Each structure stands twice: as structure tokens, then as C-alpha cells.
Length: 179
Image (cartoon, rainbow, N blue to C red; front, side):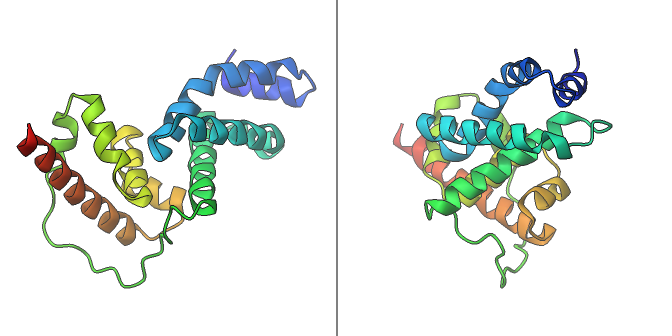
């Protein structure tokens, strides 16, 4: 059964189908959550919150649309809420942001194959930079999709990604110079 068929069956009263939805997406929800918080326990907490929100929110879901983008938005919003509650995430609506000149080399992110190095660098970065890099390079979202998901202007998204890439490159270069 497709996700939408499972959802329709669940909405018609077959509660067991929700368990199938959870089983189909629990790894994705956990890994996306983990990419934001870099902590297994926190990622499990966020995942649990996501499935509670999905359980209560499926009645509002339009089954004519694909499920995965809606699920991703629920995960992103839950991660943002989680980080804001803990005071980790600064306000994302950077008022006086000026568009940064030039562009960082995005191939540096793709060229790194050692996941533990990437994870170490991402874990050391501020949450807002971790989030935009994860959405852009792990989830492969467009700037517009990121802006919509985070409810911020596209110019702010571009600036955050630029700054995050610059920080990532500096941290990578610093790690490389030590080895």
C-alpha cells in the first residue's frame, strides 16, 4: 500500500495502519531529526513528537498530495520548536542581513566522504547553520523550499547557507591542518 492509501485507511478507522506509517518512516524521521540536533536521545524525542503530531494532524492532510514533503515539514518544524525551547536556535528572521558577496564552494560539502568528519563539524556549528545545511545538502531542498519550511525570506536562507558553508569550510580546513 502507498502512504496515501495507508492514510486513507487510517482515516476510515483502521488504527493498525498508523503503525505501518510509523514503521515506513521512523528511520527517515529519526535521521532527519538527528541531522538537526546531533544527539540520539534528542532525535528520538523529536521523532516521538513528530509521530504524535502526525497522528493528530492526518485529518488535515490532503491525500491528493504526496506524503513525504508534508512529513518533512512536520519534522523540520518539530526540530525548530525543540531547538527554540532549549534556547539553542537564534531567531531566524535576521533583520539586517546583507547579501554576502561571492560564493563558497559547495563541492567541498559533497566531496567529503568521511561522515564522522562531517558530523563532527556540523555538531560544532550553531543550530541555524546546521539546519540550513542539512536541508540544502542532505534533504536536497531548494532555497524556496527551505524558505517555506522555515518561514523566512529567501534572502535570509541564502545568507544563512553562505555563512554556514563558509564556517564549515573554515572548520574543515582547520581539522585538515591538524592531521
